[in-house]
Amino acid sequence: MNINLNSLVQKYDTPLYLYDFDYIEARYAELKEAFEGHKSLISYAVKANSNLSVIRHLASKGAGADCVSIGEVKRALRAGVAKYKIIFSGVGKRDEEIKEALESDILMLNLESEAEMKRVELVAKELGKEARISIRVNPNIDPKTHPYISTGLHENKFGVEINMAKRMYIYAKKSDYLDPIGIHFHIGSQLTELNPIKESCEIVADLVRNLKAIGIEIKFFDVGGGLGVVYRDEITIDPRAYASVIFAAVKGLDLTIICEPGRYMLTNSGYFITKVLYEKINDGKRFVIVDGAMNDLIRPSLYDAYHKIEAISKGSIDSSEYTEADVVGPICESGDFFGKDISLPPLEHNDLLVIYSAGAYGFTMSSNYNTRGRSAEVALFNGADHCIRKRESFEDQIELELSCDSSWQMTKNDI
Ligand SMILES: *Cc1c(COP(=O)(O)O)cnc(C)c1O
Image (cartoon, rainbow, N blue to C red; front, side):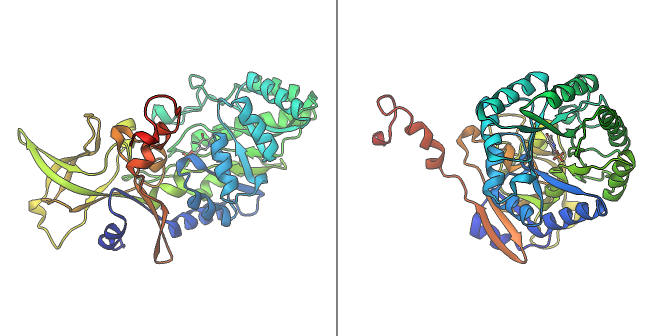
C-alpha cells in the first residue's frame, strides 16, 4: 500500500481503521456511470460503514441511503443525505421507528410482511399521513453466496413471496394511508454471479407489468445491493454488465432504478492496521499475536471470511525466511483470529500488519467484548489524513453503566 503507515500509527496508534475516500468516490462514480441514460439512484447501504463522514462523502456526490434502523435513518439525515433519497428497510420496525420515519418524510419504507404493512398503515393513520412504501419481494433465487449472507430464498426470513406481494399492493392501493410507489428485492451479499440477479429482475419486473395492468403504477425498481468484491481472487460482476441486465428486464417500463450497494464501495477502501505484540510457537505451530481482535473485525470469526494480511517490511526479507502462522488477537476465544496459515516474515514487537478489505462490515460490526475500546477511524483524502472517529476510551465504555440509576449500585460518585 502506498501510505506512510508509520507516521499514521504514531499519530493515531493501533488498532486503527483507515479508509481511502478517493477510492470510495471513484467506486461510486463508476457505478453511477454504469446506469447512465436511465433514471437511477444509488442508495448507499449505511450498515456497511455508518461513519458520518463516510455517509457525508457519498451524499456530497449525490448518493442516497439505504437504512435498516431508525438510527441509520438519523445518521443519513445528519450526514446530509437528501430525505427524498432515503429508504428504510428491514424485517422488523418498532412503531416508534415507523412514526419517526414518516415524520422525517423520507422517500419510502420498504416492507417485508403483511403484518408490517398493517402496522405502517395504522401509524400513518394516526399521523394523518400517507406512507410511501415499497414491498420487498423474495424471488426464491439462490444467489450462490455464503448462507449467512444469502437472503433471496423462501427459507430466509426476508421479503414476501410474489403472490403475497401482489395482494399487498392491491390492499395498499385501496388504503388512504399507503402509497405503493416502489418494489424491492435483495437476494444476498457478495454476489459474484450475474444470472441470479438477472432472473430476480425478470421475476420482479413481471410483477410490475402485472400490477400496471390492474392500475397500480410502480415508480421505483429497487434491485438491492450485494455486488461482490475482491477479497482474494474472486471474479466479480462488471457494473456495466450489471446495469445492462437490469435495463433489459425493465424494458418498456418507466421506472427509476435504485441500487443499494454497501460492500461494493467500501470494502477495498479500508485497511485495518494492527501491531504485533509477540510471537509464540505451540508444538511447532506458529502464532502471531496482535493488538487487534475479533471485537474490531469479526468477519474471519463469523463467516470464516478471507482477508489478505501483509507485514510492513523494514527492508527486504528473503522469501526463505517466510513461514506460515496464524494471526490471532488477545480475546479469550479460539475463534479470535484474522487469518490462518498466513505466510509471514519473522516479526518483532511493534511491527505492523495490514489487514486488507476492511472498509465494509468491519467497524460497524465491532463491539466492546473483553472491555476493549473500539478502534479509531481515519479518512485518507487528497493526500491528507483526517480523524473521523476517536478511539474509544475506558471512560466512554463505562459511562452508561454509571448514569443509569443513581440510587443503586455504581454511580459516578463512587469513582
Ligand atoms: C445489506 C443490504 C444491502 C447492502 O448489501 P451489500 O452486500 O453491502 O451491497 C442492501 N440492501 C439491503 C436491503 C440490505 O439488507
